[in-house]
Image 1: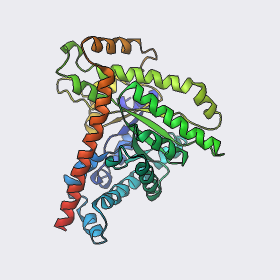
Image 2 (image 1 turned 90 degrees about the vertical axis):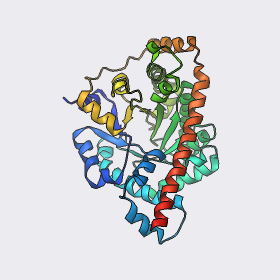
Image 3 (image 1 turned 180 degrees about the vertical axis):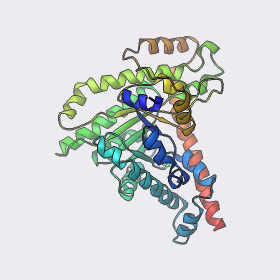
Length: 357
């Protein structure tokens, strides 16, 4: 059995962390669905920046839409929604077969809005309505200002992918925002069956401290933090608060392991995939990692429920001088900033192509 199929059989969903028009036009995404057990995908500003700036695949549509006027941002969202609708339709059979648990694609609100609650809510609702696909998540960052937007959007029936989560504390805050949104729906007489995932970024922990710890600790902190969050995820599913909602039709907010491509050239390409084979979760991986796992991935072993080893590894990093809480906050802030930079680059690429048209 291929490693990807074995991972799927274990109970972990494999999502692709990429989308380009070429992937859709040449049938590669369909091949991934049919042969590599891929059951969803995610996108972000960096992915779209590379896709639009790095190819001519979007040029004709940019020329066509340029004539209609509008802002560069609005033109970009037209391009992105066109791609994501096509991808959502490819995953629609998965979404139906798995009763709405899987088969999703994700579109991110403007990173400029990461600290603007009201604007995030308005844009998330408008974009989801514009896309008109039930299996499309709106990605909203788990920042302090993003949390109330998450609750409001879920209450309004918008499926949410909570992004830019790094630490256990940030994850638990996202869970609270999710539960609050569903509880509001119940209070209003509506069913709490709105899908959500919580995206934990893993590899950036190890990149941040690569030159600050002993080589024996290299590439171990991200996996350790993920182990602690996995324990918190299982505690959430067992909690009275969630189970009350579950009796009314709610489903768990699934834990999604993001940023699982290996950044250290000296480490295995499948380092994070091998370590994070957790049932009832999602691993979203870049194409390079997906292909490497297909070729070289080991038969998966399920993550243990007891995070004692994770706690011990985090403690070793703390003893080495790493302030885990401060680093988690910094990583979220830097992640939000890097997406803004990608957003500006993306809009500049759209503007340049409009000017050429």
